[in-house]
Image 1 (cartoon, rainbow, N blue to C red):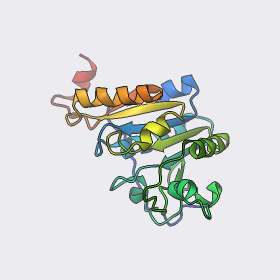
Image 2 (image 1 turned 90 degrees about the vertical axis):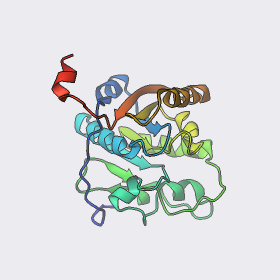
Image 3 (image 1 turned 30 degrees about the vertical axis):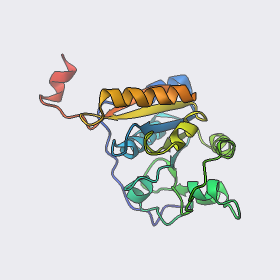
Length: 215
């Protein structure tokens, strides 16, 4: 599916993050970005990260919107009315094909799997079903980046974290308390996820940035 009807989006690079080289060196394929709490800028970080990977790697990149948080990735891209992630995992009657849900954006270097239109109700995320989907997608893409919900907003990210090659924790500067970020990190590792790095997002500089870099 092409993205001719999608909304054009200018990607802002989150502050103090460049995990791309690390990921390329470790040869990771499936990656989850999550945060302790909502509003930490996970979607912004996921967009920037997917863009960096697409520009620096030789293969294709897929960005999955797995978050139901308001103002999420699909809403920013104008893809909320398209089938996607939730339809593939929670529509047991007539699930669509993954390739029919993937959107190829004309103004971005990566493809997107929108959050989808299926209302999951009380359905729980099936780890085995997600494992099969991620295996299928990782065979088609060099990198699969997942924009996940916050740890304390949904248990899904803990499940997803155990199925991907690496997890990146987004920390919102001056809003996420150190203790909260540390607790979220511990929850991920205790669940069996592999935490490979973090993004320090929305940092404010109280002196010129060049001075910070030369301290």
